[in-house]
Picture 1 (cartoon, rainbow, N blue to C red):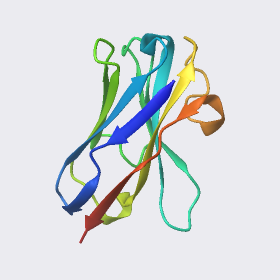
Picture 2 (cartoon, rainbow, N blue to C red):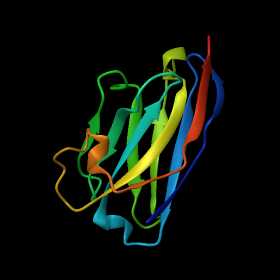
Picture 3 (tube, helix red, strand yellow):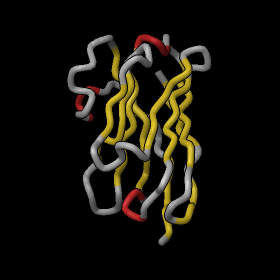
Length: 125
């Protein structure tokens, strides 16, 4: 499956952005989806994930209550709504797809089979 992330940009602290990740090539609903991020000089880290049906979501504690992951299987797209952004949210954000219906391990990048190219989010103080 091919993944194309978009929606990044420059925003002031406290602002909002919505990232999108459009999938093509395979049956989108066969995949759980996740968002990861990588800040300069740091390792890639888990942000959020959503089950194949959209019925279950997972968040890192650092974004819980501020970010919302959702998906539209009819549009083959997963979203990440980011509110109350902080400078420490600055990173390249990647979407990823994990084949199958088992949500175990969605916190780990090793679970995912396909990755998008990343979109840069910069939050100014």
